[in-house]
Length: 75
Image 1 (tube, rainbow, N blue to C red):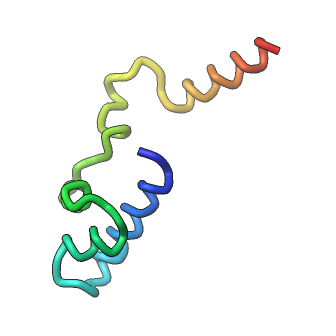
Image 2 (image 1 turned 120 degrees about the vertical axis):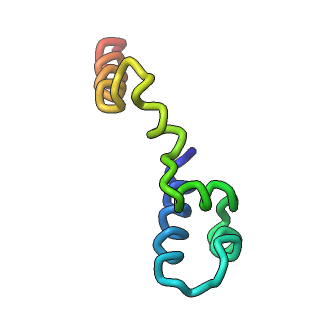
Image 3 (image 1 turned 45 degrees about the vertical axis):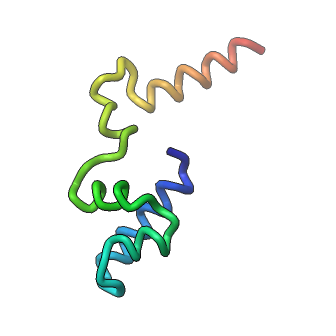
């Protein structure tokens, strides 16, 4: 999921906490987020990216470092 989608989800969750609308579906529609995604996040379910980090060999920081070094040495 890209950064703009994560931002939309975050904004929808923040707005949900203010209590403007009466249903999760209205927040999902207002922020352009899938209803089930918003519902899952509100119930505490992590994103796919963060939910599967424990299965990866490298951490996100290590991945970025490896990419930077690869680019540096390929020049």
